Image 1 (cartoon, chains in turn brown, orange):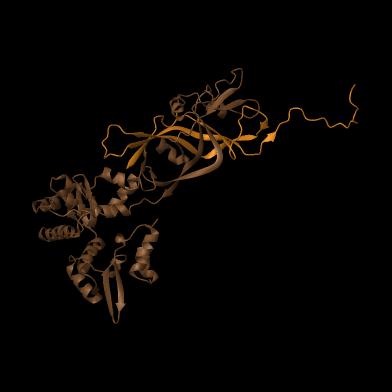
Image 2: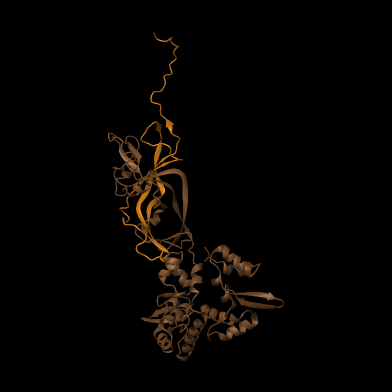
Length: 367
Length: 106
């Protein structure tokens, strides 16, 4: 094409491309002439995106974003789903004709206007289009980001701008993580993350244990049944012990379920989640003989709760070394999410697996 | 980074573009008719949206990467597809009646 600069200034997007005439062709009879628009050119700023009908409402109503860093492969996100974007080229010649009634400016200004046919003009030959393929949200990065700076009780972040390193707001995460808002929120909940002062944080394990211990200690002191702890009482007592409502509520949510009764809120602690936390604490120092572990674990859990090794499926691994059985922590939550990486990690841990041991680590949460 | 996909037109009034597709690389135009092409109007299985990418460097510092915006400016639901080989049109087909060659006229 002659002058790329000049052609960029020739208006083609004010209607008048002639698409209406082309689309109105009923076959047999009507004739439309097709010519090159004066502004015909590469128009690299125009791209075609293939969109299934179920995506159109989100796309046409501004509910879609493209996310990722420049070096990553872009993904397109609706409020609840993530799609990879793949350019698919075509060897055909796809001429694009802008909308509107025909009144186009053809490339050859000397074309006779004695031509009674309607004239449609093409402005671009499309090299292909972008296809969307539904894909798993890329959440592995979320875990590593939030582990940079876990929340620690009584932490002092400081006021220096440098101290913002490792702290991420919701907006920061939307820019860095290739996932839809809905999937990002699910990912945060899976990590038991909590938003404190605008930053999404995981809570350091020691801090979690301190808070849980305090809740349990207070429940004995104040006679709160573990399956019906009165919310207001728990929050006010813990507050006077120096724990914010937010962090206490977060822990209650992590280890229990809220129950409404007669317009009052109660929390019921979940035996499995609480016992798991204690098991992880006991195994914090490394592998132990099974009998030794079971003894320590049973003595650490709250009275009224029962320790059962089956609760720890997908959280610990047992192995026979000689005559003894040893146990160590190995949590599914620490494994990569992508199938190939997960299997690599599993076989790195153990070259051979029995199906019953492997199953908890490859359950349905893999995409 | 995060790029919001904008659409000023809204769902019911998204302007419709047309596409004329030729199989292979086009080496001819339609306004000169020595070739006849048979084409059909095809409804696309999945509509195509026409997006325009704009880069705005609206007064940002050297640290900030240029902002990219994506806007939906149209939708394509149909195309006219020509995929058969063009048929050459000869305006005066040669007569096939058997004639003996006449000697040249005087």
